[in-house]
Image (cartoon, rainbow, N blue to C red):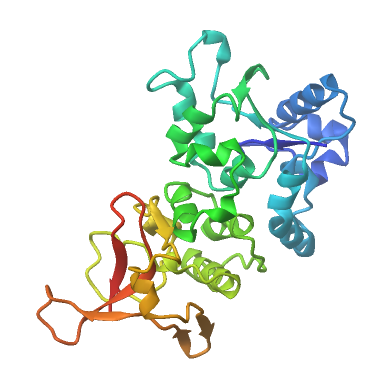
Length: 315
């Protein structure tokens, strides 16, 4: 089956609307539904999955299942149609040209569209009139430049081989309509599941996401984030949002067979989160640049890919 990726606007056709086609036709979003179906039929598909009208949002159980399964829906699709309503290919603009309209498309700025870019095996980008702009493959260099996602990802690379910090950085500048979705839209990218609780706020949702991640991963780059410059108070080891990983695109796990690795000071890489906090063992060194003798550098099991420097946090 094909699947549609798009940015939501006013008058989207809902699951309830689509039960009565005459009601659906009165919505502004119906033209998009019709266009997607027409494009799918052109290539002999009988079905297409569209999130706006294929999820019954009035059922909390169905909504929770859909949010937790969304990455899988896109991964299992035969092809993903990316509909860019703010792009007009008839202008003849080269998408590779500097400051092209493609670079400014809001589709690249939304939270949910990140997994819709990464999960499918085949992605085609379409303009407002359903004219093909290109595929993820032949535009991979442009998409990499726009998203700061390594081009290797679009050349068949396994996203789970990239560190947690790197994957978080891909979402650092993306926005969602509902604050909690900044965390929920990342579940598939980290291979975790959790119930959505709208109303809990973005910080609680992101904390729960991190707690789920550390249950299945010993990647300590999850602690390799940078607080906003205006913050000066003490913080815990966990980030408050993906935006705090904005400078972590080059953070990789330390190569385990490196005999000079600081991580060899600590053979136990596992850590856990319990009701009394985080349990973790980190190699410590005195901080020579800090006035207080009680402040140490705690080294994480990761380093910068650019300068090979080991990363640490203050404790």
